[in-house]
Length: 321
Image (tube, one colour):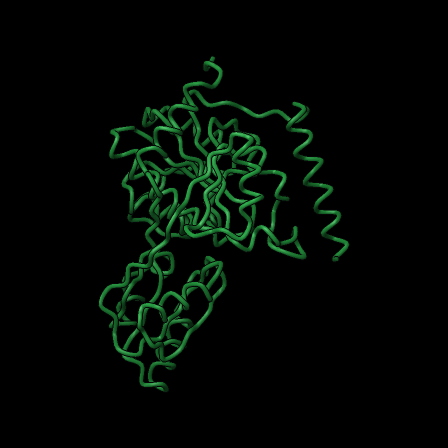
């Protein structure tokens, strides 16, 4: 095992212990905070889960905002995401959430400061905290942790992709698993017996009309998963091109893709919603014409009870000061 993994694990355990014992303090917002997070680095579906949960809250008429760090942005401080803005200012995922849900999305290194701005400007009834499981300096009223099959036999960083060990699931209120997940039922059963809610989620790729033999490209955490979904949909790519997660596309990237299309005789291009956000200007997308965007949709089993469970557990928590 990489010796750095041991050091990382020790540092993570110490930090969590300091928060658990109150040595490191967390601040509370006026309105409840529901966190959506995970244990591993990227690729568990936090953004589509936030969108799916947000749509359920909207259906109930609950006013909410989304708080995010705004990973990858070049700005600093607390900013309200502008839907017609760009990923460099706000981060690709907050921008995508703002466009899909149409609710206030506020980014900031301190999610407490972001939440205070949200409460002053928008008077929400509830905050959704995006990628918040490790952001312990903000008190949350309900913690949702998304898991993948790989997480249960993975290692801590840097040997693996885990940011925290499985034991950290003790802090969770709900554990969301891929539909059909069964390989580690004894582990899940243990957490269920401890009162953790176990939810099942299904991820589907909505693919529009796609050019024949497209070049499929993306800059996401788990590109091979996207490529496999595309092939499973009956699409035969002329090529599959990977970029780094959160990649901000530039003119040279477009020229590379166009040259590849000419060389391979591809009919056009297919990418993800997040990559479409990172393409930025419409001119870059226009150059890739014909161009199609696949949207990831996440659905939860028994969604009405999901919202009821969140609201009921929030109501049972200590009265707010």
